[in-house]
Image 1 (cartoon, helix red, strand yellow):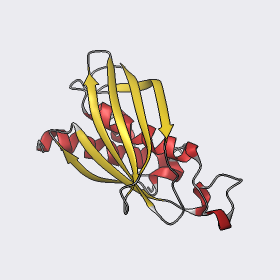
Image 2 (cartoon, rainbow, N blue to C red):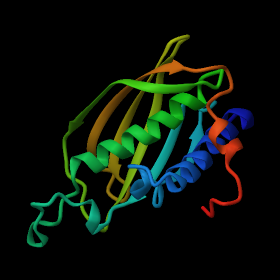
Image 3 (cartoon, helix red, strand yellow):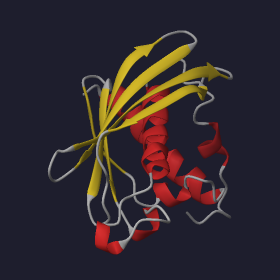
Image 4 (cartoon, rainbow, N blue to C red):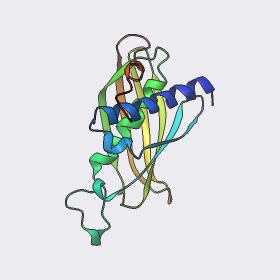
Length: 173
């Protein structure tokens, strides 16, 4: 692992944790549990994990059926993980916005299990970045979903970490 590149993903991950909690954003229910597990191949591959809870279930999930996790939760985890991964690979450290996100579900996540998200960078260009994520049950290794995320870089150079630099001590996160 290149320490500078891995450090950039760790920095963005720390910022994500602070920002989602300080702003009480949509992703705050994910950020409280998401963990960056490892960064490899000069930050071209990363692994995240998240334990699944009852609150992640679809409204129609019944306990006797194994309490399946809502696909939107899995999609949000993939989007958040690949966003950080793509931005960490932009040599100009810009912010980015999603232009395409697609998911294929081939299994189900269940309450009490831990999801593992293995993200790989497919391309980082001057305007777009693309990552692919394989979501598996961390214990069994069973594939649950595959997602592909394309983002367009926006903003000034070195703007990806602006928020963290602007936090003041009123936020206890």
